[in-house]
Length: 237
Image: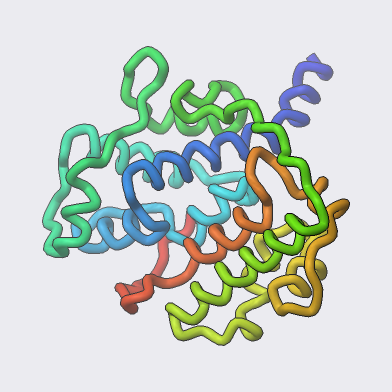
């Protein structure tokens, strides 16, 4: 029994990463930002997992989610399946909900709080449509490609900061927080134009996609809406 429990404990990090990836894909496929459901809940009068906590869950960094969070995810899922939008006044939210799809198991059954919790702790696999694909092989990296990618990520970050009226230097730490501690110093230096990645360094930064690109995307998605959208009190998970 002890070894069974230890195996369960050891599987937690991977399970949370898979769960977070499922929620991110679900959100992206529905065309939502990390703020969409929170704003929907405020308009329609129901409680949701806060956008800040959603960001942590999507990154696999949320720790032990309280039971309330799994019921809130299930409530959103049910509302989508039943097209129970509630009293939504925002045209933007209505459009975001119009083509949204709910999470269902491989058997077609709608997921409720039991399924969300079981998946989060690794007792139920992510539905096939949201499972992590086998990683694409890493492209062959030359010094020229490393320089090109560094410039591409620097431009991506700078343009997003400029679009939102942010100072790139002041916001570097926000991107760096998306990366593991060991990678943050180099990421900041590259985005601040102090240096480029070297080809050898990029060998550690491939997981089916380039990690700096993922970190910039996660940072961007965690920002307040560019139009200064609603900023009400968040509901903790």
